[in-house]
Image: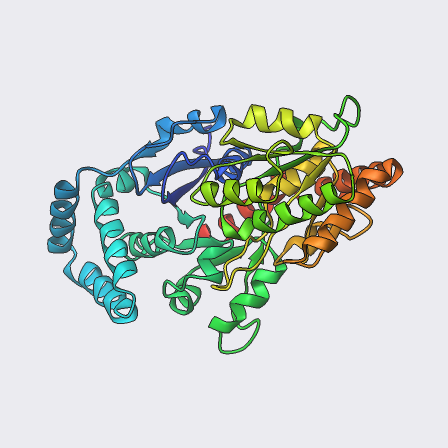
Amino acid sequence: MNDAPATRPLRVLYVVSLFPCWSETFIVREMHALAGHGAEIGILSLKPHSERIVQNRAAELLDRTRYPRSALRSVLDMLALAARHPFKVGGFVATLCARMWRQPRNLARSLGALCRAAGQWRWIREFDPQIIHAPWATYPATVAWFLSRLSGKPFSFTSRAHDIFVEDHMMAAKLRQTALAVTITRNNVRHMARWMDAPGAIPIQVVHSALDLPEIAYRRDARMPHQLLSVGRLDPIKGFDVLLPALAELQRRGIAFDSTIIGEGDELQRLEAQRDTLGLHDRVRFAGAQPNTRVCDAMAEATLMVMPCVVTKEGNADGIPNVLTEAMASGLPVISTRVSGIPELIDDGISGRLVEPYDPLALADAIAQMLADPALRERCAEAGRKKVECEFDVRSEAGRLFTHMANVAHG
């Protein structure tokens, strides 16, 4: 009696702008968790490997990753691909130009991304993905759509924050053409209704950016007194320019604290100047980018995580900052703002504190309250861990994503 042939695992091609990327460990966790559910992962990076810091879990996926060839070679590969598939390639490029000609910079970058993908077409065909997935809705999703046209395989994408709050890379068309639209918050679902004929006309699945909880120890002992921690890119959406005047108010009130801000970015000089003008040089330290192990150590030592996120005048914002879920999982009480999807994570007064954005006095009041009330910190820490366990466990969230992908791949 012959055994039936073994079923091949679900083959998922991830199309990413850059892999590995220090600020996108949540995507690495998702890939590993999908593999744990039975997916075979391939990764197409649209940019060459350039990161100085490579987390261990990302390094484990490098042998599954393909990078672009030289610019000239990529263009020649695109021309060769167009010669073999003139209607598919020409039709997609024509669609891209017709829909994005008012965004010449984004159009040029999109065409460049298509060329870089064309350079790996032979490998993509050999990998033979059953679904092509982009974890961002901009260039990666455009390339995933293009590869779907070429291969006849379905594509999917996840939308997160700036890729829908600020950008519009043919979103209405992508939502109509994708086999699976995913986003990370219910707030995003409401936001994306503007690209539909009617709210809910196109189903969008909510799958949270989630954590590998067994790797995060819950700790409430050995924490330093009055130690405030903030972690993130030095970007306007993080609200660090609101944090600093709140800290100056705490200093004016005579409240003891020390603040560490981990992250790097273009705002560093401006923020350092603001800190010094406010007389906070001895109280606030900018620690730069740090490896994940050091960030975890800092979370285990701090008293509070403070992330006063905002919506910029351009409309840009976070979805749910991953550092908030990480802090809550580790037993670090959190303070943030009523922005975007953050209220879906933090229940004010139960699993943390929420204040209005751009309000340094309200932020100072919340910090002062939490610093003065150890019992409140304990309650918020316990509730925060439970919230993350219930709704932000990468194994369960990736399991839901795997099911959605498998349903699409198998029709």
